[in-house]
Image (cartoon, rainbow, N blue to C red):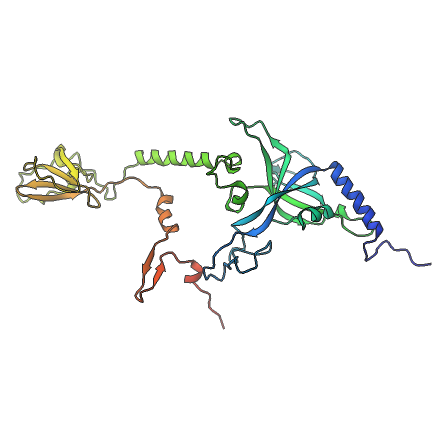
Length: 356
């Protein structure tokens, strides 16, 4: 009589029977799940950066890495087709902090969901992996304040493995468990959420991006009104300039507050890119706006004397100043006649050297 053993290296009829029962159990008791299948990254041109291989080289699938330096795929591409599966998970109250352990552990809206492996592979062609986006219609929110729209809850797969409860007595696995985290309004999911420029984009519904931009713009406008810009820290508009004092220094805009105003409260006859040819007399002030910064001139006979410059300007936030540096698309011509980009990747400037 042969020795009894539950293990069999081949998937026999017992495996097919158990797998069919498990599949029916998941289908009957599971919730409907919409799958946004991750396909890889968007086509990126070859910029001769070894840390950023071109996705157009014929190898662009789920295992392709867009940025080898940071090990991330920012420009992800998702299938336009949506697949429907059934999944099961344990419902529970969403407590932000786990106070049963030492330290502070934030378990904010993290789910562990089980899927039938064979049904999953048959539907989407592979197992779920990190990067796939899952849409849960049973968590649909149709009571949004201030909106008639209703949206489903979106999660992204962060990890996947075989669960312990998915093994049968013959040591074969039938389930696939995925760890889910809430989707974020980031560059990785633009293919699903949209850019927010279209009225029907999901980004306008699940993200606070537009409201945060409006709040930020309002704060910047208020700052421009409340914070004067005076790089030379001169507030001299209230001072009186006595032109009858002998050996006085040449009149400058210091006596006008460095803001394009005439000294001693005098009015300016006009402003523009050229001097007026008529209608002016000695002592009149005129602001030339074709200079940067603007310059204030005083008429003396047939001449216009420069009495200073308008050094004031509008306050600018640091992010606006950095925008010209980060989004710099300008070029320059080198001594050899070739054209180069002003913005150069750090990996091209600082290259590693072999330490022998």
